[in-house]
Length: 469
Ligand code: MG
Image (cartoon, rainbow, N blue to C red; front, side, top):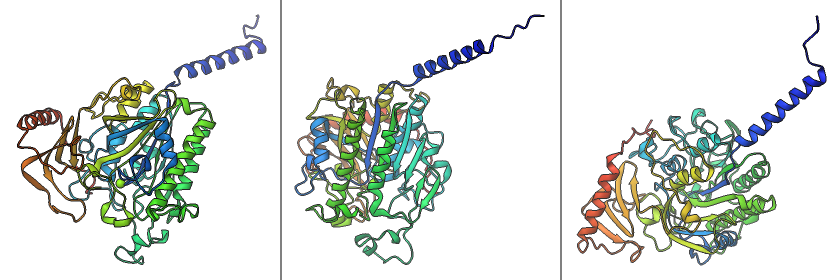
């Protein structure tokens, strides 16, 4: 009987054809959207960059990024402190929807048992599902236990510290503010991690900005097969302040200026890598911060410029961030926009650009900023809700901001949550420093804001806090 088995050469040809077909199918399925880089600072003030008016901190690389890109004058974080702000960036949702805020503890600590729940869909998960390579470098602060680390939230790789650089202070470190104002890495037993492994403890803090930068550059250089999402969350300028030898005495602003100028150098390195690898035209880079300057750290804290107050508060200085977006060939250079934007908007904006699927089973607090990036719109968002943990403190509608409650940051007045006897109204274009309450003159505006609050609350389900355990 004749054997029906094909000749080995024919078999080899069939296997080769199958392989080529599989490769073609993979290429077709691979995402074609732009790359995304989010550079996220920690406690950077609205007034801390020279392109945002600082008189003695020099940021030539960020100034160039602004010249080649878009400067956002009214871009906000979703919370005035680290953990809730980062949860909102990652999910496109107000932190009270995920339980990543607390009226008591405010942020996660090294003894916290909680973290960003697996049920949340992160930017990284959304983009990875759309075919992206995803990398996280720097401070995470959304849970340090294994199940909450970046590699469990959609990132292919992680290199950084899992919480703030002032945590895990050792008992033998100097007491009070000395260990902050005269810091040494050895005072803080902060781990440096690669993926889920601790690779150094305490982390050598003066070298962090440079090592994060190197890691980011290597990630970009090795991302040729797929589009990528890189989240580079600097540990600085959160206190204790550290910079490398190269930046000691670099700035006229002293230590704080040295730290910002090293971050500026880092941004220059990232953008230069994108240019030299031919990726610049296909990469959207966002530079912003998690919350405003930590003013109680005195000369170790930054400046919110003419904005009122800083970190920890829902005054403008606590949540309005110096923000730049850069995408050569798509974003026209030398532009400034007064459009409202929020870190939560990156979710919908990136989804649109990457043709990724947004979660459709939950409310998002995210607007698509693409029309603003392309210069086709002066703004897609008209409102902002300023929360301090679970408390709605203030609401912005167009140029108006209405405060319902007030509380100082860390030991500043009012020390306790204080309900305004009657809400206080400010016009942020006329009065960016929120000095002159004009509520009496504008009852119609207050009524419109009240309607916006009612609409906002109609689908608002607050999750139980995950920060108090
Ligand atoms: Mg912060």
